[in-house]
Each structure stands twice: as structure tokens, then as C-alpha cells.
Length: 397
Image (tube, rainbow, N blue to C red; front, side, top):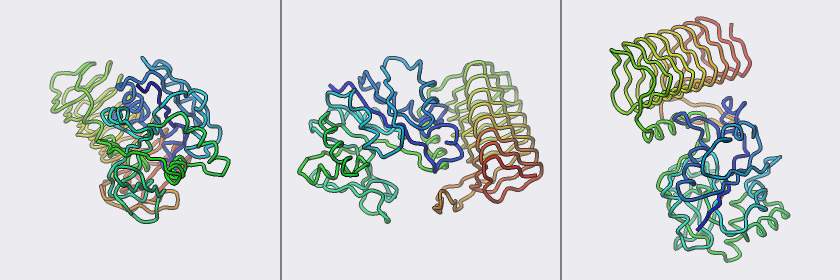
């Protein structure tokens, strides 16, 4: 029985800026839980008793959040420089003596797929997933369920299966990784390809449910999926005259005032104030200590902790970062658009609203065009129409 898992959580996630400027990618909230917590929960449900977490960028954020995580021993090892996934895994070598699992901390995987991986009789196994856009990932070519070839991020969409990066491996793999590393091979997928080339059989299993977040708008899609799995529960104070339909989670010490209309699935955190007469529509998560004033409407959005949304806001298909203050009559305009991220142009197939980094102050009557990114610690003056991305720590007056 496998008792240990190595979780790779050292990366920054540059394509997810401005949200990763103050936290690692693995700590981005999905239905009010960090991505990494979903990974921990999935392996814990499969009897894993120790998780070795490879940390690096903003590691203190991870270590502080999980200091009270129950029923699993968490051991941290540091990758000082992000030199690839093979190098990251190598940092865990001294903690591994038996077969083990490797997972990425920034993906969500269902516990059942991990169970099948653990039970698989092969010495080396990999979870793969069918995907319509393979060029963003390591593409896996399969013969008789074994890997024949892995092509990392090809220029075009080739093949139909991608690597989830979730492996079951023997402890002897560290010898192979060290040998490859000395030859300048830094990616775990490249090490696996070398093993295949030398005759190793690496079995593949189809993952049932696997999701990752590469770009900011992916956070909205994954939030929408994971919010469906949240337990229905209402704590706090719900005044008379509140309408709640469908599965809704409301945290402790939260107050929902009269006239509010909430349609699940919705997650509202602890110590929030909602309304009166606010509308929260499906696939919305609202973080802890957040205030939503009267006549504001939020739908299919991720609102992080400590956000203050004034009256008559209309927020749709958007992300509002931690600690933002938004004055009256703020509007996001959702729509399909093309967005530039890290010198790449991405044409979105789904509507997207605004993406606002943390600690912004947005004055009244501001309108944001589809897909526009406002960096962290920006100040936007009243009556502004945002038609292009705003860098972090900017003022628009």
C-alpha cells in the first residue's frame, strides 16, 4: 500500500498574474478553498499518511495555511530555484524509500482516479486525460496502454491524450532523475521519455476528472465545476424575506439581510454581510469577511476574501482579488474576447468579465470591458471606462 505522496508546489504561475504576485498558484481559491487543499484531500481519502510538499515561491503562504491540516503528516522541502519538475521531485529524495505518488499542486483530481492509480499493478503508472487542446500540455502517445512517446507542449494540437503529471513511481526513479539531471534534463516528462526509450514499461490510466488552471479565466471555469461539489449548509443569520434556491453554502457569522435573492450553487464564506436586496446567482463564490451592499448583483464570479462591494454593482464572469474596495455602480461587461498574457494571444471561447488584482480601490460608476485585467494595488477614479489592461500599482484618474 502506498503511504506517501510528493506534491510539487514550488512554482509561481506567471501567466496567472496579478493574482500570483502575492501568493503561489497552488493557493488560488476555488469555491473558497486553495487548489492545493483539493489535492491534499484527494490523497488523504486514499489512505496516504504523509505528504512531502516541494515549496519555493511564497512558500510561507502555504506553510501558514496548512499548519493545522489534520490526519496527514506534511513535510516541506524547498526548491530554491525553479529548475523544472524533475529537479523539484529530486528535493524529496531523502524522504522516499518505497513506491510513491507524484502530483502537481495546481491541478484538481478526483479521489477515485488516484485510487485506481494506487491499485494498478504496474511499477510505473501515469494518469492521462483526453483533451481538445493538447498543445498546452505534455501530449502522451499510447500503445497497448503503455507510453510510447511524450511530446512536451507541441506547437499544434496533436494526439488526444495529455499527461496530468500524476504518477505512481518506484523509489529507484531518483537514480534515473539524478543521472538525467547531470545531463541537463530538468523536466520529469523528459526523464520518463528517456526511461521509455531504454525499454521501461510505463502504464497509462484514464483520469475521470482532472482540471488545471493555466490562465486567470480558468479560475472561473474550475470554480464553476468545483462549486457543484460543495456541501449545502447555511450558518450565520438569515433574515426573513431572503429567497434561497438550490444548493447554497453560507459560512458562520455571515449575515444575509432581507430581500436578498440567492440561487445556488453558491458559496459564501464566514463573517460576510450580504444585502439587503442583493442578488447572488449560480457559480459564484464569495470569500470570508466580504461585504456586498444593496441592489448589487453577482453571477458566475470569484470574489476573494476581504472585498467590499458597494451598492448597485453588476459583476459577471469576473474575478475580484482579495482586499478590493469597489464603490457604487461598478459594472463588468462579460463577452468573448482575445486576451494577451505573457506575449501570447488567447481567443476565449467563453464569456469573460473583469479580472481585478488584490487591494484595488475602484471609485463609483466604473465600467470594465470584457477580459480586461486590472493589476493589484491600482486606483481607478470615478466614471472611468476601462478598455485596456492596467498594470499593477497604477492610478487611472
